[in-house]
Amino acid sequence: MIINYSLNNPRSVVMITITLLLLGCVAIVSLPNEYLPEISTPQIIVNTIYPSATPKDIREKITIPLENALSSVKGLKNISSVSRNSISTIELNLKWGVNPIESELQIREAIDGVYMNLPQDSLKPRIIPYDPNSETLALIGVSSQTINLAKLTKISQDEIITKLQKIDGVGRVNIIGGRESELQILANQEKLSSMGLTPETVANIFKNTHIRYPSGSFIANNKEYMVIGNSNLTSINEVRNMNIPIENGTIKLSDVATVSLKDKTQISSFFFNGKEGIGLEIKKRKGVNQNIVINHLLKEIRELNVSYNGTLELYIIDNNYKKTSESVNTILESLILGSIISFLMLFIISGNIFSALLIIITIPTSLTITFLVMKLLNISINIMSLGGIAISIGMLLDNSVIVIDNINRTQNIPLGTREVSKSNLVSTITTLIVFTPLLLMPGIIGAIYKELAISISITLLSSYIISVSLLPT
Image (cartoon, rainbow, N blue to C red; front, side, top):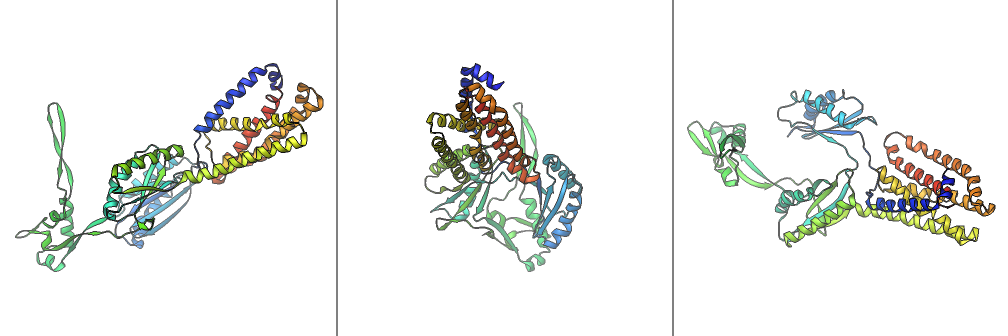
């Protein structure tokens, strides 16, 4: 049927081919570039913070009750946990194919059921879905010759991260290194005792003083205004002069305690260009084109450098686009080299440059159609999909070589094409069957190799259709 239509409507075949080539070129430009295929791993992490608790207390009071509650989640494959100072981390591995959203709702219900029985000072458990696709998109360094590290950390947290997170496609920004300050109140136990106070009493007074609270509302000019009471302490002197009620009146906090602003214990350091600075780890959102995000990120960094006018500087230290581009370029070079070698071998064997050129047409046409179908199937350009195309380069010429050779032998285009069309089809299907197990493999391995099998299948099928339609035409 395809052969008859192609030979009877050569102009239509050429126009359809040109249309597919144009659409394929558009698809190539718009396809997102990734290093690996997107994988939805059914894994969820539950983090709970219980300040100042020992690992033993964390295990007995937080981890074990939560594990007992979470063990009833449907589709749970296994559960593991780590209890350490102040933090409980529980990792839930779900069976492949389980809907992570439904499981997350069940986990929330289980947590709500047990939360009231957890220690009063513990924070509510946080649910963190594991996403392997949220890999680091870029690593940015922030440094300054004039600003100290503590102030640079605050600027990074309050200004730079806020602006970077507004970029479309950026998931979150993690800060590495830096130095933060904290308010330290060191009570004098003897003085507290003489005043009839305890450290707990002073802590509660400070907590109740340093708050913002709603104080009602009022209506004016047909508008309702909210009133917020604000007793936040804004300076270290205000903290020192805070009133502490005692039996005979009040005293200042500084009378019974030493108040100072000191650096927190530094848990990470970030060095680049031989000096300490701030590292910003940029994570991308799932399903976005990293090329576009990187371009927006570079533009924003240029604007930030201009706005800070040399007081601090932002550098792109590393980005995932570089790694992905190198992998993609390597595979593309292999494709081009393979095409050139195939053309030379065909020319040497056939001795006919026209036949060799006709056969080589199969390569760009098949590849362009493959990229078009990948776009329709929402498959990105990654090392697996491009690897499948590279593997199929040698095989996609087989059908065209056989058709051209048989046409030359019979000196009859319709007859030469029909004689080998069925055997070529069976041969192509047989090759596709070899890759079928890759589509059926379970788990994360199947998810990774699926796109390789799909790209090979599309390329080989398109090469067969071209051999019995465009080449005879």
